[in-house]
Image 1 (spheres, rainbow, N blue to C red):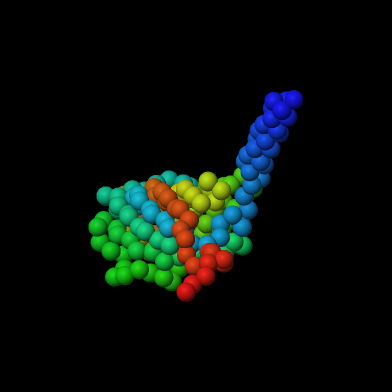
Image 2: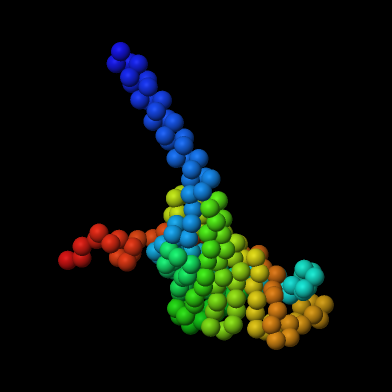
Length: 187
């Protein structure tokens, strides 16, 4: 009799685990999934100017980008960002740049978007996926809009604003900070 109850209990637990996994996969994410601080790294290349038809006009040599950042998501739809990065081994700024903001959306299937806005006028359109119950974010820049650019190898110029073709990936992981842990006592 005990073994039948144990078997029944085990089967019930298995069903509950399966149902909860399916529920997460079918609708477990929302903007509230991203709340708190996340450490990001980015690596990739700025390839050239992207025209309105989607044609890439390559630069003579792609620019290599490396970047680290802290993003603080509000759990609703906004974030702040502080980053430090190099382009071709040269720092973009002398120190961390804390003056970035953005908006984000999260779909129920754990995909989403971020729009990162720099004070210089650069705007990044980022596509992301969220994993591990919201503790991991993987992303790619879809487009980078810049106020000015060097000419492409074929002479294509930017004008006052243009999109650049980029191949940049982001890896983010939730980090602990005192703002995220409301039960934490500081002594």
